[in-house]
Length: 129
Image (tube, rainbow, N blue to C red; front, side, top):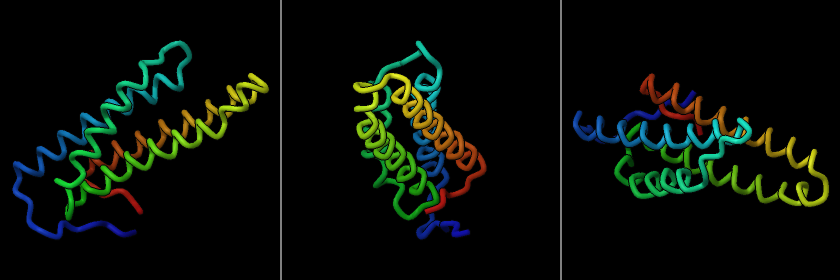
């Protein structure tokens, strides 16, 4: 297991600020993930875009800390989910049931990654590479 140790000392105010930003982002991702899994509760892509922008803007502030891995984790999760949704989009056009199943699996995977990140953030642990 490769835990990231803070390279430079981070004052507690900065560390707490990064953690708060991380929680806001995780909660926005969680709302979108739960909405994707439960039918008829789509909160919209807008929340996901807001969370992604937060992560992209604040990622540099977390460089050299264990929290940087969480920013990368969330960014990678969103990018992979978007790619998977786009790749499986033709299933909806050709066959509704396979499209529904594929998007359901992707949504559950997305939810799993967000919950896993939240658990590790709560334990002050870096995300694995």
